[in-house]
Length: 367
Ligand code: MG
Image (spheres, helix red, strand yellow):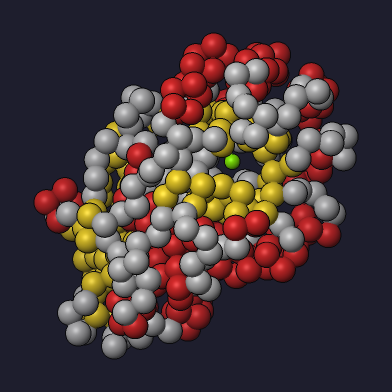
């Protein structure tokens, strides 16, 4: 089996809530997603998806995915898509860095491996743990009252895990955390994700201001060193996200005991192959994980479901069903949230069938 063609579609994904806002006044109203197809000489096609959280979150942007695919694809023609380590080696040799560009190709090749073997990707990634995957809901940054109302609404839909977008004015953030925690059950879990938005002294004030509150603190500051300083001054469970962008940073964080949980995003790490490597190491080291991506629709959500479902339950902190945030469906067969949980498909590969009418014309086509 050989890669005969690499192509991509650009899809706009508007949001049910209209916009998504987080630290530093950043917001997105329509996501720009790239659906990547890898076609083989036998005619089978695997699909992946890359959707940055705007151009100002991680070092990634939507047009960069397409430009990178045009650069990378000629180096992959003729390769066996089932040989994922070889494929990733070739991608790293042909293009330095740019993990998010490689993520969609890697995801599509896992889809092909699954189709070729007749197995769901979660089985290939290690096995299906538990019946389903518990989801969290990210709560866009609004006033404390508005955020509490949103949480109440999503709780009605079955969610029991919530991630508040903070990283704004520290005094308002303290109010946001208190307003939401006050209306949750003791067994519900609450994360305050500052997305690098606080300076170190602001983060210190917030963790003191919510000292008596049951809340996890996620990525308070921009640099690893600032986060580590905050971590060493608080007993709140601590999550690192933006700083954990490669295996080396995970090992450094582990060595410093800098976090209790890490947030693994598939495109931040460069695809399912590299995320699996980090995930498996986290399991061996006893570090729990949020398993997700930066954003996406049905195909990203399917990939997250397979990654999360193949992670032992005790290390699976939460995962994300991005396809329930956006108004456009791009594929059949993607997981659908039920009462705050989702499950990976039992079908071979990612278990999705793209809706070609929604995807439109190809914006990248290399054969
Ligand atoms: Mg985060």
